[in-house]
Image (cartoon, rainbow, N blue to C red; front, side, top):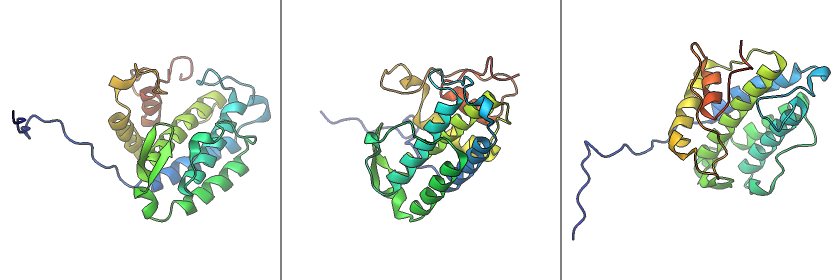
Length: 208
C-alpha cells in the first residue's frame, strides 16, 4: 500500500534552524559576569531557585557551564565533565567565556556535530542550550542576590523562542528531561523571567 502524500496545508511545520547563537551567548555571558562580580561574600550561602544550590554552588555551576562551552567548541565530550567547578568568581568566569568566544569564532563550529547530555546535535543547537542555561541561571543569581533580573530583552526573547521550539511543554513528563513543568508567567513578567518560567522556575517568593 502506498503511503499517502502529506498535505502541506495540514502538516506541522518543520523546525527551522535558529539564528547564530554566538552574539546572544556573548551578551548573556557578559550579563552573568556582571552579576557574579556584584555578589557580596555574605550572600554566598543564600538560597536560590535551584533548590539544591546556594549562591556559591550555583556560581560554581555557572563557571562549570562556561568550562563546558569552551571544551565543546574544542571538540571535547562534555558529558564527562563536572557540573560544579572549583572556582565561583567573576574573573575565572570572564576568562573562560572569552576563550569560548574565540573558540566558537570559526563558522564551521556551528555545523559540526557535537555530543552533549541530550544527544548528538549541531554545534549551533548546543550553543543555544548554553545561552538558555546562562540566562536562566543568571536570573537565579539575580533574584537570589537582589540584582536586576532582566537581561537584554531582545536576547531573552530570542532565547525564549528557541526554548519553546526545542524544549516544548509536551516533553516535561519525561524523567530524562532536566526541566520542570512550565510555570505560567505572572502579569508583567519580563522575557528573562518568562524564560526561567518556561524551564520550570517559580517566580513566587523570588519576585516582588
